[in-house]
Image (cartoon, rainbow, N blue to C red; front, side):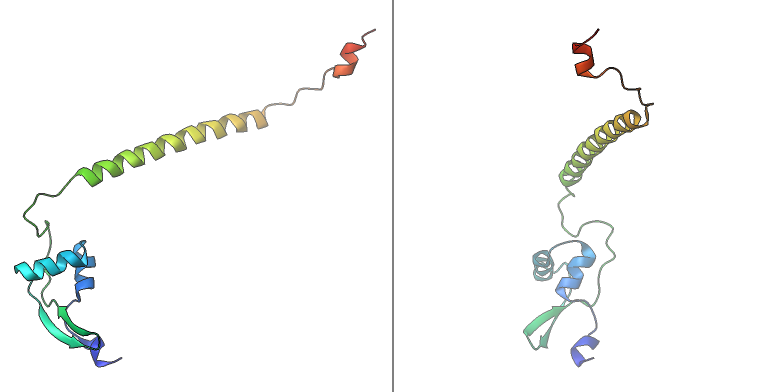
Length: 116
């Protein structure tokens, strides 16, 4: 391992994944002072390292969390459940037809035409 791998703290990307937000949001938090970070030199230029990650029980932003994405996801899942329920009913009907006792063949069509 190189010396870069032994860094202490979290990168912006790691912090974003841990908090469930974008890297842009993490940079915004650093700029506003909601997250404390230090600049370190790397082979790609200066980058932020966040030493202390907050234990997040609520979003760091002052805005209340939006429930709209959850509602949309619930509606999507409800539609999927409806589709799969209808599909299962259709398959059950097909299975009943396949398992039904076979009827002995009756007269063939040409035998009915030429009855004696």
